[in-house]
Length: 269
Image (cartoon, rainbow, N blue to C red; front, side):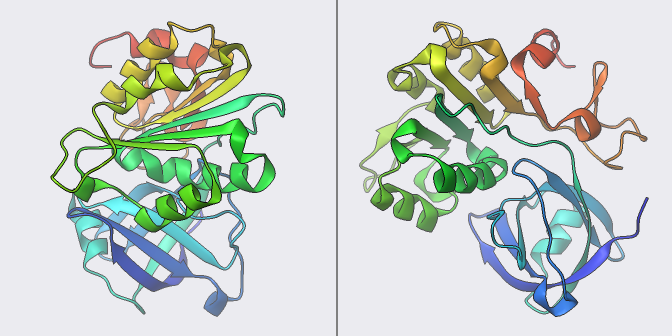
């Protein structure tokens, strides 16, 4: 495996109580970082170890590298304590990517919680290359305080992206949808036979999305999911992310529904 490249932190933003976004500056190191929407990097915190984190920035911004991270262990909690000017190591990018849907297809993007982060680069790319009226973005979070990228959501709405936001538990200031994001799916499939669907979120949410989609004639080959497991090596050697016969890090993390449908039906796999 190649050693990590070292980049300085340009900024850190706290998105929610336990989720933060790190922006790395590439200009000081004299290079660019090319990646495809849906890929991930291994972020190395010196003295602690590595964590697999999806790239969540705009693929067209070659001079910065963005990752949105939940603080859940020694490495990610250590990353959260860093500040602008500190350095971290990066290996990657790894894995495959979200597809570019057929031009005539509508695109339905469904994100739950932190699942917004791996889908964000795809949204940037699709919004730059196809009519907004051919896209719909459904996004759900636990509460209004758990919403990510609020500035993006506001800008995209103003640009005319068909966007629905829902929360499980609202407060007195919330004026949008309340309920599971998967409950919105039946209302946003006007042409299911010609729709490509991208889904990312907690596994229970993705399974609920598949149940909703199964009620419509969406072609299974046009349904894509990004799966998550404990990825430690990123190249399919350690076996930590083995999901049945596939390695999430090497064969994924993006899969078509036919590739993983039978595996998702197995409890606790």
